[in-house]
Length: 478
Image (cartoon, helix red, strand yellow):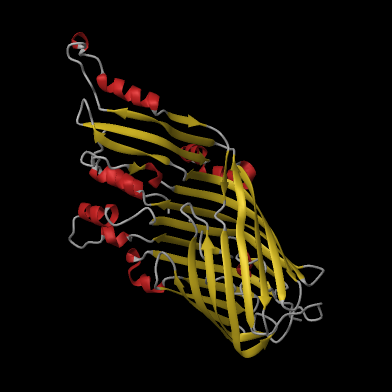
């Protein structure tokens, strides 16, 4: 079982769908309603808000910590096969990833209840989240083969990839418990559109010296690929009904799940605030249009063996097919339909903020009014400047990933707020971001982007992200 070099197949392995986004520019940016989505327990000063459908919250990112598009496809005079061999096959490890996320709000509204200390929010958004780790041993097999790799075990667990597309319906409650503490929780109902996961693979492929032939090739495999929705959407695309199929599965016609977000904001003193949130503690049960595959078993072969004396009268026999059948009996490839559960990529946020400068009153839009004036707790004083640090963690198939951000926020008048960030994570140590929030009367517009230094040559970037939105906000002005 000798694998030859095949660049086309190799590139197909690389080109997976581009898992969830670190929204460090949005987190604790309390002027923006969507910051409730990353901390349901933040201090709120809105009387109500309404997001413009499909425009209130659009965000996305794509990242590759090991190699960039420019590293492979730049017109630098080098042969692409050499760059693939040196920078991909020889330059990456199983810790390197290709990942991406896209989130679009369908609608998002919030309003203050009869009890002015409680703020409610509800809405829905579609999210696509995908991640694949570099399959190092698979890449070596495809590019170099295993003919001269005697006694090397090619690890089949190198293949780890998962992706999903879900519609998320949510309802949140935010409560001002005291003058210093706000808490919140958000329930989520997931409606799965599509899913694929292959993260618990085991086994190996190895060549050892043979007794009757040059090599004995041994395959020990326990591999699974689980999918839901892919077949239905593929058939719908062939019949020009893809949009209808997506909408059907997005509105409870596919897989269902439940999730929970929790968060808090606590003032240690008048100008020092600590916050935290835990997001997407949840699962999806996939039961609609499930198609899964497995390859499980063990086999050893020295290739086609012919005893000329014994088989002389039957040399027309298809010995190759006999070999294939023998291996397939020992390591059967099975297709089956059985429901399965996936857990959402849980995210943790923690921040510490220090406010300073000119006091602005209690409302986050910069006016001197307090929309909660007369309530049992009221709002704390706001300041022109804020500086702080933010820690982000997300659960991934190869273990938690972290990002550490330092930020500075400046409020200018009643209409403009700016935030600058510096983030260090596995993608880059030079990630400088900028966020802009504009309040023109009741109209709220925000736009944010990360890794700004890479925009001069986006193809050479290892990471890029953006967030933007449009809302209508009332702080209860009279």
